Image (cartoon, rainbow over all chains, first blue to last red; front, side, top):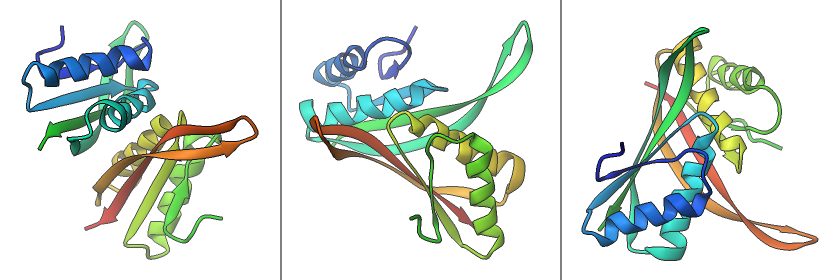
Length: 90
Length: 90
């Protein structure tokens, strides 16, 4: 699902996503997007902070964008907030 | 508690904080910081998105910063992620 430089944060524990981000950097990625929607947004920020503070201090927050996405379901269209945190190796 | 240009997002409903932000802009603020910690981070993004999409389309996201704060309690020091979303009138 996720492309090489993206990690989608969902319902698993924080460390699952931290490991995914660290792995991508260790495999040579220059930047990694951490993406999340709705309540997982808080967890995405945790992931970015744990990566920087505990594993890869040379990685910086390059950009953060927030947006609104429309989700279609059987009950109609609902709107949900989303975040895209870009971590980059300097 | 909060200074004139800051809104701290906590346990109330999203619209409470949306109203607080809109009020500050209507009273002449050029920019407003929306701040939150922990699980309230997702709600802070909701607040920023609702302000921009439904009430003040001329307001832009000027900057977003994430950080880690240390909280002292009876059970010791724990770390919590924090966000600071700066909305600004162009």
